[in-house]
Amino acid sequence: MTHDHPTARPARGSFRVRTGGSRRLLATASAAVLAPALLTACGGSSPTTTTADGLTQITVGGGGSIFDTPLHVADAQGFFKQQGLQMKFVSLTAATGPSALQSGSVQFFDSSPTGFVTSLAKGLPQIAVSADGLGNPLGLVVSKKFAAAHDLTAKTPAAQVAKALSGSTGGASSANTRAEAGIFLKKYGVDPDKKVKWVSLPSPAADKAAINNGQIDWFLTSEPIPLQIQDSGDGILVADPVKVPQWAAEQAGYGQVVVTQKSYAAEHPDIVKKFVTAVQQATAYMNTHLKNSNDKTVVQAAQRALEGVPDTVVEDSLQQVEWPTEGSMDAAGWQKTMAFLNSLGTLPDGAKVTTDNWTNKYLP
Image (cartoon, rainbow, N blue to C red):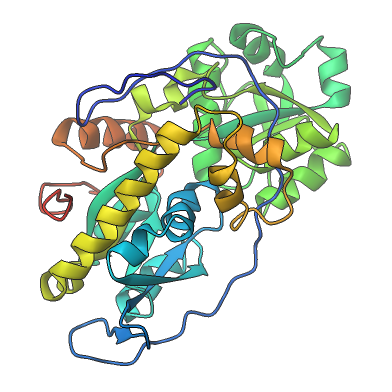
């Protein structure tokens, strides 16, 4: 994950690190949760329907974040239509996505690896059919008051940032983000359990409120909120995947995967193949077109998930994720991903991914 644009892509299944400076980004993603409609049955475990113009309608769930951009690019650029598909997108959460998939109200869910592996640990018969984003777009934001007191800026080296956080009050809205912050702190000799006073908060939005009212000195969460705070002048982004390579694709592995039910894939292999083909076309398109600062087609598509966010903020936020030219996965990639997830200590006991849980066979 990075902030500039390399011209070469590594071998299939591998990851790359790009270098660059800390950048300001993002505002809040639209959070409206749309109720997924059940489709007209035509047989199989998850029903489908055909539109008046002969397209197969598929309902796809996503988190309303920057990771959903490939879906919107595939729609905007006509990649779904070229495959004979019409996408209906619904915003879901990590909690509601797996159940929507199991009920058949969505045919595909754009999931984090954490959510996918947790679903597997619960015995849900799901399968990953493509990787459409690499790395973890995390941001650590400190309050302006804390930054001034410790001489922190967006360019402050990571080791100095970690040292400044010793003895501070951090906010955590999930076990994952607290653990991800811990990875960073431990790297530089700061014990996150002994040297940080933690305040548990119900959501990333609550993190934002807490930093503004002085309840906490800093917090870590996924973009766009950290970038929004910096962009609005309410805080300073002092750590991101460029400064903390443990969060980036090279060390953390897959950031987002396309998931479906095993039964749906078995009964509708043609639809699965068409869907992941279109998504792969989209990530390849993004990989190429984001290198041209004058090309706003990807930004415009991303704004479907990030309504009202300024173009420059969206454009910078897209650089926080590695967009692969191919959606293929491999055992080494999953091993790397699981090593990262296990280091957080937040997965259910016995959680694992085997070759029965992912496949490349539907990819072109």
